[in-house]
Length: 209
Image 1 (cartoon, rainbow, N blue to C red):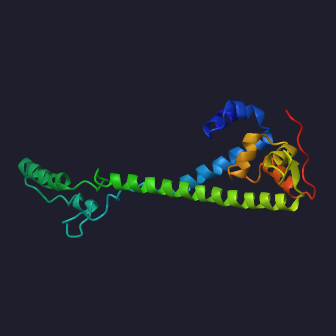
Image 2 (image 1 turned 135 degrees about the vertical axis):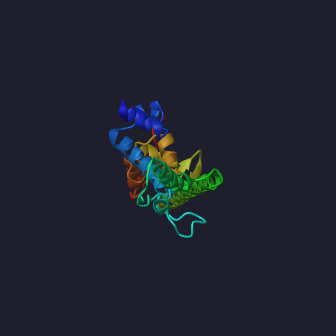
Image 3 (image 1 turned 135 degrees about the horizontal axis):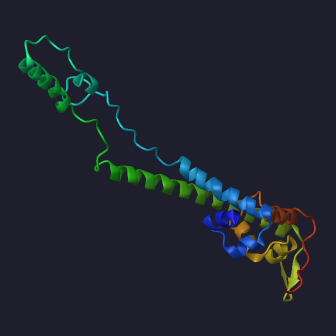
């Protein structure tokens, strides 16, 4: 059930989940996990709070720890003098400024930076898929040009892609995921299609379903 939950989390339907072999499922999950890890690594780090002992504006370089330091108690002549001394020592503690904290004015900029980083990661993933799609279609066309042409409806044509992925044992949906760069190279379905493309003889015409 944990594997099914993980598959649904990355966008795999239950119907497709039960049709996939363990090896194919592991390959797809690994590919999706890599994309999520890329997004996580490129997200901006959380802002750090300033240390308490940092210099405060307008303090002339004095730090909070210096501001709250308690001076030595001076000799007194009685209770009244002791009360006066305690009040004098407490004053700097009340006047010490609080450490700087992120304000609401800085938060929109940080959110914008996070959105830009996520968009950049998505654009990078899309570019990788487009490059993979172009390379696979180039290998497909090279194989179709290498193989003898076949007669379909009394016309000479290149071997259809349907013949190729059916000979590889890959259904229509996953075959076009491979063709569009969505299926990772480590998938057994990708390996089966690539193996057919490397054969010298074209795949036979599939039997009608």
